[in-house]
Amino acid sequence: MLQQTQVKTMVPYFERWMKRFPDIASLASASEQDVLKHWEGLGYYSRARNLKKAAEILVNRNGGRLYDSYEALLTLPGIGQYTAGAILSIAFNRDFPVVDGNVIRVISRLLCFEGNTRESENTMRFWGWAEKLLAHGSAREFNQAMMELGALVCTPRSPQCGECPLQKSCRAFKAGKAETLPNRGIKTETEHLDVAVAVVRKGGKVFIQRRRAEGLMAGLWEFPGGKIEAGEAPEAAVRREIKEELNWQLSGVRPVTVIRHAYTRFKVTLHCFEARYQKGRTVLRAAEEGRWVAWEELKRFPFPAANVRLIHHLSGSHQSSFSS
Ligand code: SF4
Image (cartoon, rainbow, N blue to C red):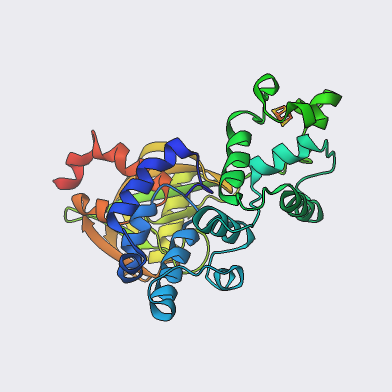
């Protein structure tokens, strides 16, 4: 969770998660939908699915206990060099480094490293430097201290060099380059998608569909719709997408709101409509599963964050139109 967001945002998610899944066995036996629901809003849903898969493997092969060797941890889905290092050092106090964005920033300033930190060969150099710097025998405290130093003192903008315990040995501070490092190269533009969706009603229920098990936001539920093509009006797009994906015709299509949301890897502008199902035998071309559900049931299903915002929007002033 901390790879997704900051501590203060993460804490309520973590507490809710630990209450529902207090141990590896309870996570392994939970349904994927339950796991995704408890991850809803954190993004990168493959992490949640991988946690569940890893829990299943540990229950089946290791009596429900976590592996304590680097090689064994790397065999679990979703665990790479960073997570294995974090687990081994923080949980077992073993001498493994951890390199995240905070650690890269601190080390690049300490060494006054001016190369592009996004280049993979340079990232590997940071692992080597972190290993050399590691306080052997105290990896648990050392790694947490480095991450904390980066988060609270050696911050991206306006680092607090006057309060920094490393100031005397910091080359960037001496060179007056603390604020200009790390060199993160030229930032690539975040992709922006314009999407039109409709909350389609029939007999007091609304239609939701489940995204396929692979790919972006896999396994989450959403309202039907899709990308708006160049030059296309949002309403025309939602009618076209729903015709193509579900073989339906709609009536009473009306705009309800526009939601702008930044996901980790892209930004979306969601043009939201309400509509009534008119006719057409349902086919599911783009989704794995579709259901008609009562409005109150929506809270049981995991949705991408922009859809959650749409549900909140409609749960206020517009809910009465669904329950009628
Ligand atoms: Fe970062 Fe400044 Fe400390 Fe150097 S002296 S590690 S730049 S906070």
